[in-house]
Length: 125
Image (cartoon, rainbow, N blue to C red; front, top):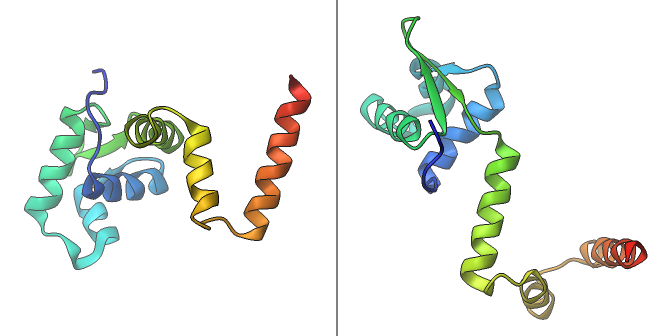
């Protein structure tokens, strides 16, 4: 199944646990990791939605069923980042970085890292 749609904040929390686990997880194991924040029906709903969207696969050979990620965390982060830049900064990474710099959102260390990265990029041109 091909992935369709974005994941919500709550779905992201579920995926974080699944990515951390790596080898797949059952609903009871997931509920144990999530703690008392969500009930069984809520967790089941999120697992079903994530399967329907193509982010998870369910292995029904076992009971309880095992869920595993079909997309890695880094790929999701990249898609979220690209979507954010497109939506908020009209696709301009430069505008995004400039806004963080202007708003004072970067520490001195981050400014140094950014400067170093820009110098490396200039050296490749």
